[in-house]
Image (tube, rainbow, N blue to C red; front, top):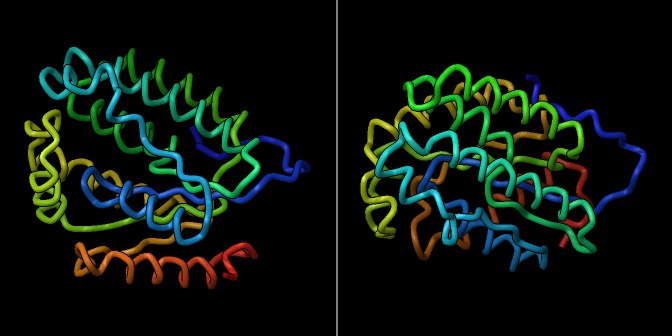
Amino acid sequence: MSGISKMPNNEQFMPYLALAGNIGVGKTTMTTLLAERLNWTPWYEPVINNPYLDDFYADMHRWSFHLQIYFLSKRFEAQRKILSNPKPSIQDRTIYEDVFIFAKTLHRKGFMTDREFENYSSLFSCMIDYLRPPDAIIYLRAPVEVVYQRIQKRGRESEKSISIDYLDELHQAYEEWSKTAHLISTFIPIDTVGYEDDKLPKLCEFIIQQLKTSTQLSLLDT
């Protein structure tokens, strides 16, 4: 399960970026800021209208597989639409995180059975052949205590039961994935500590500068 698309590269597509990172790290906010700053199309994670999320946080054993299949299908649908979008795009969370972070962590913690994880991983491997990876993945990082505080501050009802231990498990999975994610795409880790609230526009500009020096995306020359 390499996670590397075998899709032919002889077609011309508009460039797109993706933001990766733990729950509460600030991906959605930064997706909005970058999209507005660059005049790109934002693609958001399906959280608000997710039919499984509340059930999942109430009973992870019962709903982990269902939730992950839902996210996988929606992420695949979004990424296919990105390929035909007439403007450059920026995506809030990647399909790679679904398998290498969330499903892997849920399986490791016993919330997904071996059979469920094997079926899920097999489906992902089939889907990935039809996808073009992002031109760059921006990995937003923050200590677990910081993302936990941010989650509590934003106050989503479905997230009230998220434990700091679960966030730490996800953080460790992200750090492990970050060692090999460059095989998928240009991978840019960004520390977000110190960039709170009114400093977020400054973080946005810093990310753009990092993209200019790390990629060949000419549309960033704005």
